[in-house]
Image (cartoon, rainbow, N blue to C red; front, side, top):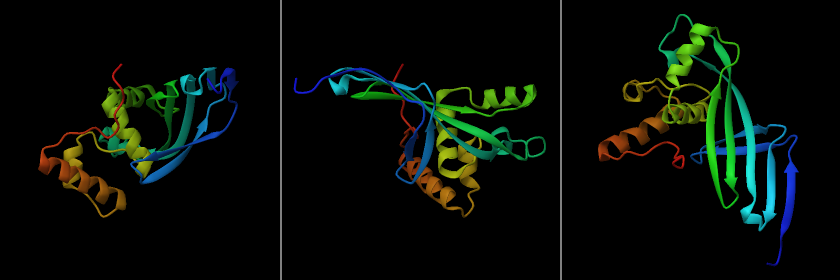
Length: 173
């Protein structure tokens, strides 16, 4: 080996640029206590990095409820980067602070699977808004926003060709 490094590097601040679909990048703030453990070969280093991006979004689209949740709320989009540097694993989360128990339960239901979290995470990163749960209905009612046009075109192309592909692919667990 030409170069070996050993030890722990604890991060107390910093940022991570997350680029979604080569369209838009968001700066995530790295959480204090995130770490990189060097184990000799640099590519064998272990990652344990958590970072957050805060935006504001209305819950009305996510919950299909214009009346009780029409105002915008803080939404924390989290990303975790774990595993080896040579093959990192990404995890995604969405947290909405300060919700009453009834709305919190509805949000948890709307984000009840990894696929739903991934779809909403990407939507929040690209457009600072949630997508409706029934994405095909959303495609039928596209407006002229750049995000809607891009997503609509990709979804129509996918639907016409009968191709299924996830927005973001997480490795099997």
